[in-house]
Picture 1 (cartoon, rainbow, N blue to C red):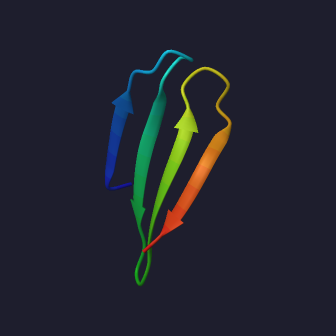
Picture 2: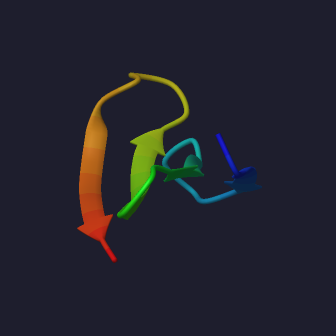
Picture 3: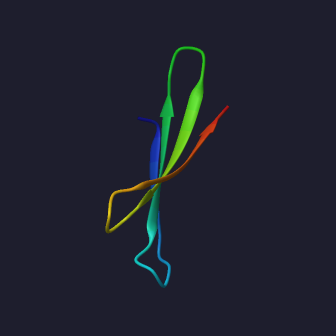
Length: 43
């Protein structure tokens, strides 16, 4: 895991979790209350 950031919003906020692998990097947007993955961005 590279980095975790929290952003407060009116519906409970979300976390951006950055995970770095050997060749790729992914950023997950996770709802802070439900734990639902809102989006995944591959770099």
